[in-house]
Image (spheres, rainbow, N blue to C red):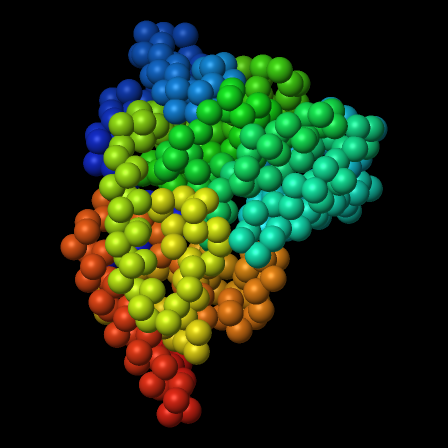
Length: 383
């Protein structure tokens, strides 16, 4: 199997597994307890918090451990809504993840207003439209994804932060796809809230974090025992938190240039198959390749690739079973036929150049077969 769907989830690093195993076995105490065994577990949480903070340029007390990116996104949006009830305006981009789109719908259902800022054909947020959308009195929060999960396009976060703060609003960024894959510095960018998820950079599923800047107030979404400094109640997922900390430390040492080289080699080989890259080519994550194969049914192509041992996706893994076209590609002005011919390949440091070249060969052969079948009037049906 050649796994090229790392934007969906990543292989857990063996060093991460080794780090978390003691906290599934002998170091099992509740960190809120007072005895010595528990104090050791609590110190492990502190160390993990420091490691995650270091990865994004934050301070340890600005890190709130959560169950993942979806919870972090919801918590940031809900906090702004509760703290600023007189500011009923939320701004998001049209290419956001459902974990932002759906809370925005709830914001509207509860009496607020939402402005959805368009992107251009390259997938970049229209900054002029953003300036017009954000207003000092009504706007509470702006939420713009750092790097898109389908195309890998990276937002101009510095410029967005300046626009948002000049208007007196707060800025949240869903950085789930960016953290651990490219340099992220919340202090330098002026981010107020940032969401991250461990399983996108070789930690387990079910653990993530919300960065909440010291500069801003935060109101907790989950109430109860007062864990996480009163900001996220619930007994901590200790093994997951330790794993996230180790994954953060490893990400700071990872060779991101090697992953970029594999992505570029893959594209150099498959672009000969009459395909094109979706999104701004020079402003993308080095992990991500969103490719359109005109005349090829992406759903059928996925079946052929799966049979030949290549794992990828048709856009976002969150909508793998959906029949509607990608809202991201649609927002970029691409039609349904284009979206229906698009596949996403995503890479990690656990891939090899040999795998990438073999995958490119299989993709080329599969695309040719799909075009031949289309020419014969045949379709590939999933069982």
